[in-house]
Length: 120
Image 1 (cartoon, one colour):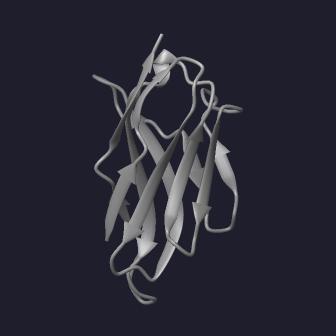
Image 2: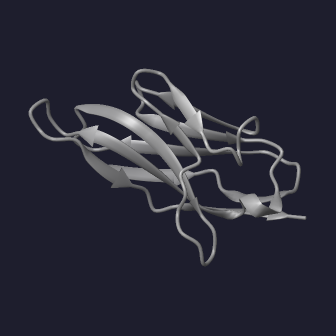
């Protein structure tokens, strides 16, 4: 399973970006999809999650500004980010929990990350 992220870049504070993460390879089912930013010198933190049942959850720091969305047909997860702040700057990693076959256990997969820079 491979995850390829895109959409990062430089944006001014108050601006918007949309990140994408496409999963490919031998995938039977995608369960939960998540986004984790990792700022320089800090640990990755979960900011958005989308379950296969359709529920979404967000960290308090991004509620009302970020929206996670998924396209199950294309196995893509998006993160729409609005009202960006300098403290949102980080490398953003997508993570999916997926099964390679009906009989196989679910496993976590990570993308390579995409850089988001927010200028003040």
